[in-house]
Length: 79
Image 1 (spheres, one colour):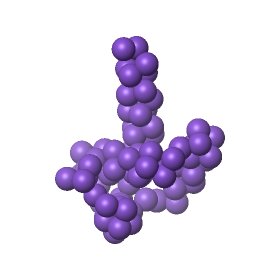
Image 2: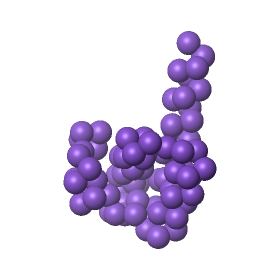
Image 3: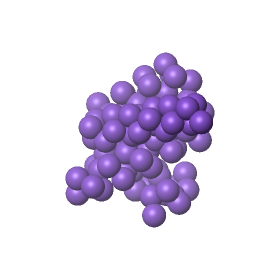
């Protein structure tokens, strides 16, 4: 499954278009994500792309992953 991918598998199976790469890079810098969080975002974006039946991760998928991360963070803070 996508959640079980290693970094090597992420590099192989998670092709990202240039616009999405740039958006993800800016988000990574702005929010100071760890490498683990970055990999997790890529995996969620890959899942979003899979749901659209797309080979490549696009900006819409990256935004979906960032939104899901934000929702997860909010739900953990509410406990």
